[in-house]
Length: 278
Image (cartoon, rainbow, N blue to C red; front, top):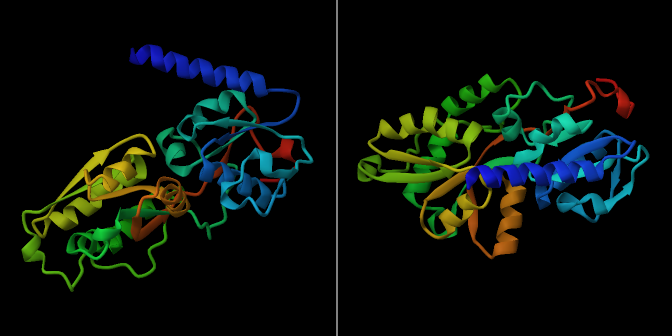
């Protein structure tokens, strides 16, 4: 059954791409509300299109007001955009999916001052708990800052005042034997938790249980329903949009890093077709 579903997904993707192709430049973009807007704003920043300013971060291709190159946009599920690269000229890809696909450096990246900071979220009722404090202190540590340095710009720490891994206001002895369950997507989120944060907490007798998922819904529903204490997978605009749409009360306890969205080469090897110099 899984093979059949995979084949159907591939077929739908192929048909979507084929239907969108014409003589113009084709760019694949994520099709979810915040990431599609993010991709379009990236292209706008380089003067390729103009987006209706009232649309904001949830802009879609319908909000494009100027498209001088007649770019054709192929809307694809964010996780599948790397798969579209052989069939489009370019693709705007989230940093985590580019890492998972082991792509080379992008031709263009977001500005370093991106508002799309990846965050750790908990239920509002838990935001001031000792569990939240120790988790936040561990993930906002110098050790995590040092870990992100290994990503060479594909994932960038935004931690300004790193801790030593611990919160001096917490009685760690009272938390010995406790387990903190966090739902995360793969790279870099679960890697940071498994390779750095888990050891920091273990030194105080606290167990970090990391549950890895590959979708953008499970982490929030798991926290909202009480099946996990926290999640680490999404950027702040996505969480804000999720709360607004679903009526949830998930709050941020730590802003950790940015995964710059990039424009990656597909059938075009460089930016010449867009009239840009690399």
